[in-house]
Length: 499
Image 1 (cartoon, helix red, strand yellow):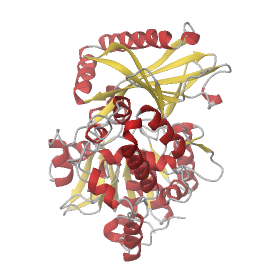
Image 2 (cartoon, one colour):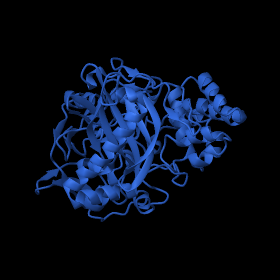
Image 3 (spheres, helix red, strand yellow):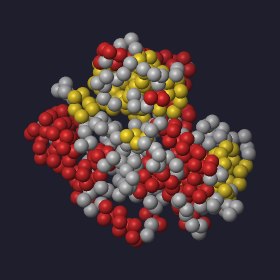
Image 4 (tube, rainbow, N blue to C red):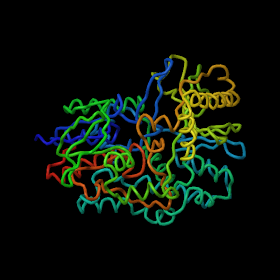
């Protein structure tokens, strides 16, 4: 087969699309605007330490789930890749001053919750039952529903049988609204502390349900190692890549995508194009605003129901060992300023279990502070004002955080140094991510569960992947990349090859 597929964007979705397209016999070329593949799934070295940007936990590590098979088919996971559960999934300071642990052992978790809210036994048992049900739910990673077989649809519905009653109860409320089922102030805080404000309640239930089943483990080597395994798989298949090759326009003739124009004017022709970039970049820039897409445009215009979020992250090199510091925790600190807002909680993760991430006798501490669209605009203004102002604001914030961590962890005082600070602006610049978002739209109760069709109305031979089509992070990126190639194969009447 000599049919050519151009894949715009070399992140997880683009790599996935290209790998499956090569397996299915297409001539493929990934066009990546930066110097490296991987997009936001990446890592880099600073001052002798390794910084992991993306994976806090990876959905799809349960070998009995379809998503695990997809990760294996694209080279990201496999029998030789060790994955480790986060247990507890997180710990957090509570308003009463006690520390709560979100254990993955449900008996331990129930006992922990009862100790914080004995008056909430009924709500606690309902929560535990929901985690058990959501942990058994099938992830739709096999095939897009519109081209799936009746047998697959029935299998998916059957996996949902215990979830449907819970879905009816919690699909239209936020995590904050769900938390009101608990009388204990501590348990209400626990329910609200991990996910962005406004997230729908089911997100908490199914992520923790999957975690209980070993489906959200950490793969060894982190983000960069995972991306490099995928990159090697693609190279073994004979796939081609061009980095530092930003696409300016998608060329359309007679209602079909027939190629792209790179920055500088070079034209590349192809029978098919797959896009894995953000919808705003695709629709407004690459397609010149000529096509109306109801799914994307309604979300980009409705900021109430489809907000985005990001993080400001401070990476700290620490001398010594973590001691009794939990691997993932939400830490209450004295308020400090990030941009124009005060923050009094920090989500942190340490990488002491990754010995290659730090010199011997050291470890990396990653500190994340949630950011929303207004915060992105603040960082953007700093950056546009001057590089010096942008750097100074990052330093002020990082120094304040370091002081608070020294107070919280006296055994690390004087043994910590800031390695790197990233803001929402960092990945807007590097990856073109919409308002610096490292995931897609926040799943509010008003957003519904619809996914994009993977096609732009009125335009043939262009297929759309990327996490924005499904609404999520890396698992949605890999699924959408697979779906894009499956839709292409379906339309081209070419067998889709996965193994």
